[in-house]
Image (cartoon, rainbow, N blue to C red; front, side):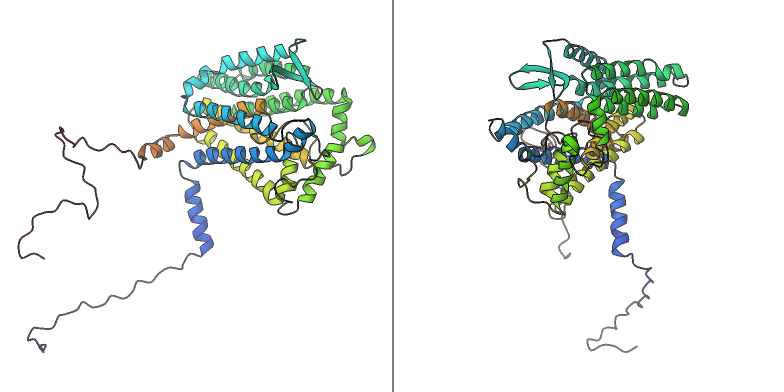
Length: 453
């Protein structure tokens, strides 16, 4: 063996191993799809979608209410920010209700079902008393609270039907009574028809449709047989047909589907100008505040037809963003209802999701000319405190249910705040050792022998 210049034996180097053959590389699209799927399946995905999506809808709705209502306020000799300030106050109160609902336990939600139902029925009866109830746009569904503040009890009837119906079906499921058709229908359908009758006395067909959708959603989630479900649906269709035939105003709205011109006597004025607003928006809109239709041409620009003003000012990009937010909110609600083991949570989450998605579809469909104009606001987006308050409370319910999932509870329990952590009681007067940080720089030094480097 040859020696080196220093007289030491040469160092034997290990033989280099052949490089392991790598598999085919994953293309960027597949990698992105894999990461997105993993992120989508995380336990807190529904929680973030509900909280973030609803917050974005509310904030964007406040912006559009301010933009769409300025001209209407000035025409009424009011400050330009009049409707925006009222909506902002309602959003603030609704935020308090949302936080309270998101922190309530499920037992308290179930306990509130009967008081909310009784209060809603009582207020709906008061609406029909002369001198107490007030009519707005031909519908007597309002109660004056003094000044410019009014309340629409039928909006709280939606929340009452969801909570009470979910609690009723859950208790019957626990007692294994849902296999009998009598327990499936009674008393859910009679109470729902009572709410529908009180609302129809005031002439509000739009809210009646939403409550009917909630009733069908609860029956569907409860596993109602097809014959039973079809029977209830048939009765509802017959009653709706009678209500439409006996009202020339509703019949005219049905005839204005897909109308592109106002028609004789400007019968389809609102629907046609809603289409004009959407068509003039283009891809990115004319700019925030630059709508032309809101200058007196489009009725109810800041309430029922705020989606048309959004399309005119923010364009196709803005309307698709709003549509995507509602789609994400609906998916998160379905996910919460499908993953829970609590029957009440399943029915309540499904009822709230049916309520919000059905109302959004009906409103957007009317603006697009695909459905008759029902006179319902866009949830969390349109102007109206009576509609915003119960809807934000319902969003708080979904947030509470999303946090209550077993996997979500475990994920939240593992989290610790970054700031304000409690240190070990190792200060003066404490017998505990001070807290050590698990880092290389802060490890305690260990005595080493003198020759160790």
